[in-house]
Length: 426
Image (cartoon, rainbow, N blue to C red; front, side, top):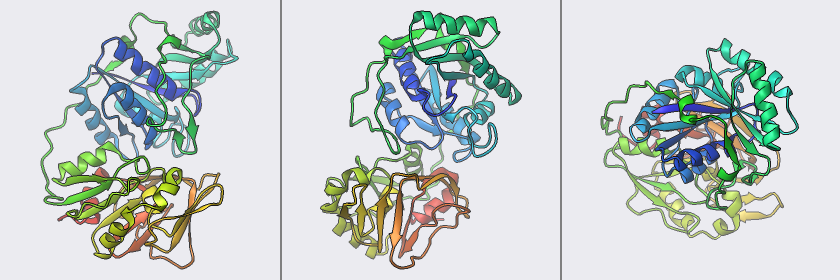
């Protein structure tokens, strides 16, 4: 499989739009294509899947790790002839420094894949050289190759010609594609793009212009060794795990579901938004994050809460993440100040705010890695027992056999610990 990484100069340059556009282009050219997302984002992969019809897996150097990322790519290589990785933020944006931990540049270097740099070229001509040359210089210092430039928000064919000529005259990577400034854009909200279920994916192809004979030739053949067939470790053998999954609980890493199946668990989906009871035969419950704030009114009258309370009071294992944890409180207060009743199992209220409350990678003392990103805060009238030891970030809430926090955990980062949380054998 041939592979490349689509990176941006900065957040908001149009990277996701170009990613979806190129996926549409490759599909239209009859390529079998797969996609990946650098970093912990949930929403972009959902949009990738709309185009490719396949799961889009997260890969990175920090939460998922280089080895596991390479394994995920190798697995997908078996079903595709080409693939694209969408970067995170700007090319060199990581935890610290330039091209630091978790950055797209570090991932490109570790996987040895070429980078295509998305540049917002609106109102720009010769200045593109100064910008691109700086990115190329730092990329070369890291052993990263910028194979081509993709210009976004280009005014006309003449404008594209100016950009292409300037890059060529100064021996910079070529302009391989450009996007018209009149191209449609996907709507966003506080956590990123809206969900695919809310709006229809536009046809971006009429606005895309490919400047090379064969775009796929600029990708690099992956040399990752396909992983051996997964050995059923059976850490969750005979466990039936109920998983909340709907528009309110939608932030689920596909690799986490793969992990549960690899550990011999049976997954039982249910919907709190539809008021469905937790499956009566479930041994364990996982409440993933999502957008409870968008569906607060419907959730306030959900029939799920009685079975949820019974499940928790029965001392069964429960893992709740971010939006899933918000469901457990007394109420959810939206941005208009309206208070909506939730399950009322734990003594706290979740309050939405316009400013970001927390963002960043997290690691529990036992080794489980995850990510935190939310605009709500938890307000409690009494002290609650913490359940996680993290260097920074939410230490969570513990009650009986329930663990709840704002962190989205990546299960494969510490299999034995995760299976312990989920009530599996050791």
